[in-house]
Image 1 (cartoon, helix red, strand yellow):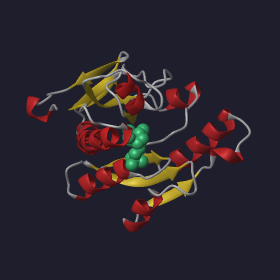
Image 2: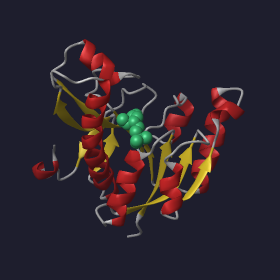
Image 3: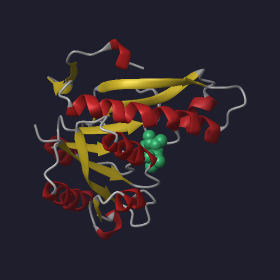
Image 4: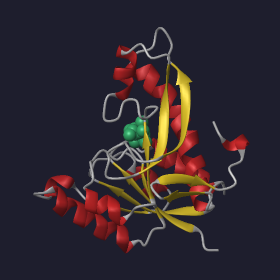
Length: 210
Ligand code: GRF
């Protein structure tokens, strides 16, 4: 079977994109990153695409008067590459319901908290303010409910007494870089699917669960 074609959407540094590229290059994912799209022209992650010979483009949200217009341009860019899977990897724009519905069951997001705790932004600061003892990240299917789609997998880390938002973010990021390629690998191998609004895991090997 042909390798799954993966489009990755980013807004910034792109370390999760780099982790996906490394996993694909190592043969750990039955898929190829065939396209990277950033909504910010200055996203550092674009350099990872360039270094790896991956096609990239910018759909700058500031160039569009409405969310619908931005979403339509983004969909056109995505569809040009005919991806099997779209991964939101540090993509910091909220997408409208028609856009999300168009890609139902083939769009994943990584979020830096143990959802349903701390949807939205500043997850690390909020976990610290709450004196949470565990924190982490979640990979889920994207639905119109922002950060609320069906959860596929999570990885957790301890919150240490002397943590600040930066040290906690760094600890979470390390597990993001393992969890996201893992789940993308499952998706590309047909082991995880969105079904009736829930996650169906096929032949889930316990050794792969964090
Ligand atoms: C990650 O923590 C991701 O979960 C969050 O934003 C950060 C992006 O990091 N949404 P990077 O751009 O992948 O380095």
